[in-house]
Image (cartoon, rainbow, N blue to C red; front, side, top):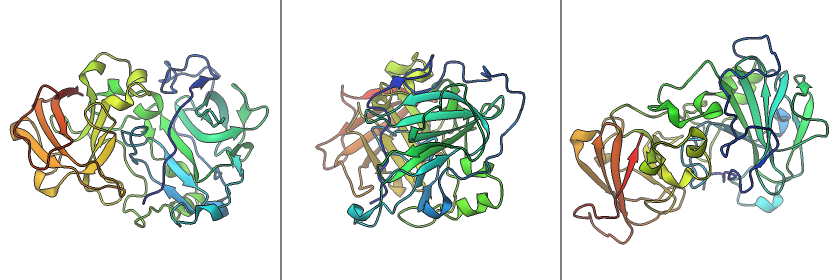
Length: 351
């Protein structure tokens, strides 16, 4: 099976003022409280972990409902082999975590009850990188300036990985059909490894691998949306007027779903956070067609769930785009053949 992904907050203890449930600041865009004068992208020159201890790197775009319904906006740096089947032999002891680039700590959030912490370092007026599932060292507080290579934290003492994300306020991925659904790091996500200086960049790209092997796209992707087509992210109609922070937080996860593409094979998938079905990921049969090409004119689409990551929730989905920005969906958990039509249990989702 693929490497397990740690869930986001079971506890959201805010250590920085002005944090919403998704862990983003309401003034993410262009916020520069520390008077940084540099502009444009920063340069990352130091590996967060000793490169000799990095077993693998997972690109952007992993899905693992219910915590990661939409493609993940960060990469995973694994320091053990999580696929060996002998996890009891892995060394999970805390490892030093170094600042990848110089900047100011402008955000701190405890993301797990056990003490896992997320920390964001702002390098320029618009460019940030962050770590999650680390334990900050003493003295690492808001407004603290760090230099590239400073040891600012350790891993948590748990396996198998830590998170690295990079975001640039000057960039928005083009595949977000409705940008009002995303905030901060998600709205402005960029592929982290591109911003490392050479020869470190090449060394880190060499570590990119998955259970299946080396993906053709070592950066990955989060934005699969196509306007007027099924592909991309959708949100329950009850979230139509909700803030991006609510949509991207624990209250929004069960009410989100995404038509995306597998981060290794690029086969189409449906990721569901809950509400219409159990939290699940299922491949979309090839006979249904490419979600990036399916729209209102295609009428009702029906398919049975299939195994993904070794798991399957048996049943059938009925899906219909009723407008360019609206779809109806229903899951029939006990069906063994195509359901005849929607019932009163069908739910509406919007962009």
